[in-house]
Image (cartoon, rainbow, N blue to C red; front, side, top):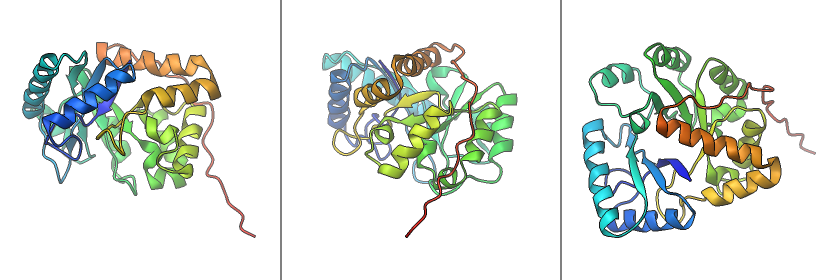
Length: 253
């Protein structure tokens, strides 16, 4: 199993704080049947993790895992918060795509989608990159206006839903929206976004078991296959969105 989103590199963002934390996370991942993890540290106003630094830290952690006899391979990635100069920074070799592929994570603020998003995601694609919107199910504007997500996917963006969201660890509302996204073919990957082994662990096996039980093995195969295709630089499987997700209206009595 491949996990394409994890904060396992020690001491550089709000994920693992020490090498010991990273080792514990790797052991937990190994128990879940994960063999490959893409390390995706934050790049935002709080954490300035650029490509050369990430590559150095990935190499250090891989050496430590070999020494600890843990059969997990760490690959380089990054989780940039969306910003206007991301293409310029990519050209300056400061942006790390997922395992040096054309696939690039893009994170939105938790409470809105910036007005320039559609144009920027288009410009990234013109540059030859494929943007992957991370955890759209946790964005409050997308929950209220799911047609925005449909439009972005329709225009070539991919998305990644968090395993813990599928399992309900972020609450019923986010779980419900996660399932609507899956049902509407608006997501292409399930990943952990793991930060630690306590309250933000992997939950990949649990999520896949849930998806298998609710939607069948074809969905599980799709998400696992897409992770493999991403790592190898192949073309991920994209189902045509079958419907626009409708915002649920609640009637109070």
